[in-house]
Structure formats: structure tokens, C-alpha cells
Image (cartoon, rainbow, N blue to C red; front, top):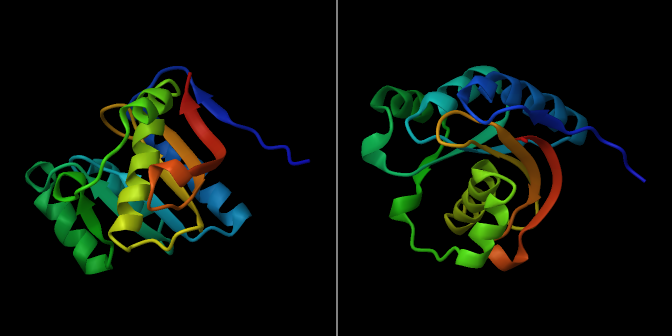
Length: 165
């Protein structure tokens, strides 16, 4: 039997971002996970993650290139952190799965989606435990350990690190 604690935030939102990154770093160290996938629409979460999660392999998934900060994109390139965009990928996220994951919050839906996108872009090997984090519009408020997969039907969430209530 394994016992772990889950942090529940009273409210979703960007005010949770620094705590999420802190929890992710701690859990990655404990679990020996070296890869972290993170959602960042404008670049704010990516910028904080590059500062706080130094030494980890980061993969940033945005929505659209024109919404992402050019300065953060430049920093990511300098640090060797890949930044990819979901609107530049051809994939189908089944609606019933989106609805199911959203019942846990928007961050859960996006955390799963971003891992599949990263696998399909061949930035992640399939079948490896990684941490994925996302949020509910801005910032991060959800983090999970997930077994990487190229297909939504084979995704396996292994642990919830944190999420809003």
C-alpha cells in the first residue's frame, strides 16, 4: 500500500502557481521523475517553471504561438526547453474524455492533453512516468503524475499531486 497526500486549493487560479511548482519539484525528487510537461498559454507559467525547476527536462505546451511571450520563447530556446503549440498539432481529443477530465477541473483535462501532444511530437517516450501541470485559465493549479501515451485511450493517471476543490 502507498499513502500520499494531495493538496487541494480552495480556489482555482494563478495564485496557486508557485505552490504547484514547489509541490512538483518535491514530488519529482521523491519519485525520481526528471521530465515535467507544463501548460503555458502566454508564457508566465513557463517563465516561473524555468526559474524554479532548473535541472529538470521541461516541455512547454502552449495554445497558439501568437499568444506566447516572445521573451519567454527566447529564454526557452536559450535553455533548450522545447515549446510546442496545440493548434499546430493534428489530434482528436474525444469529447467524452474531455468532459470526464473536466469534472476534476480544467487543469486535469489540459494536463492529460499536453502529455499526449508531447508524445505525438516525439518529445516524450511512451510509457514513462512524467509530471504534468496546468491550470484553470491562467497560472497552474493542477499537477499529476501520468504515464505518457500517444493516445488518449491509453493514458493512465498515476497520482494527483494537487488540484482545486
